[in-house]
Amino acid sequence: MAAGELQPDDKLSRLLASGWSVVGYSTTMMAAGRMTHSVLLQKEHVLISATIVAEGDHEIGRAFTMLAPAPDTKKRRS
Image (tube, rainbow, N blue to C red; front, top):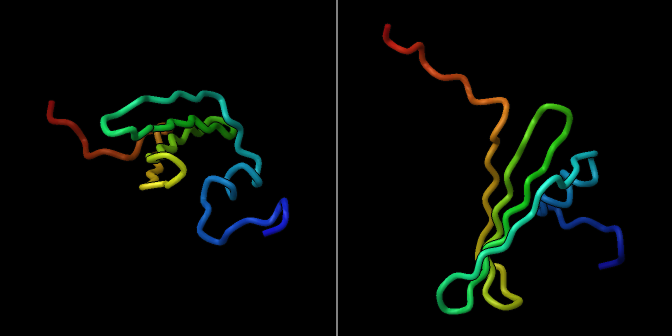
């Protein structure tokens, strides 16, 4: 794959290419040599967390969670 080409299923690359910015990053060592990489992305007032779990050079999984604005919730009881 040439530099700059995106894989069709690479959501993180698509977000970065469409103007999202990395505003935070952390890594965590887990058991058996696994690492968790947490990336905080921002575009205007919207925040998304991308979590990537890897073992060595092998990616095990990814998850994306919208943090802000908060999802609509049912009305709370008074």
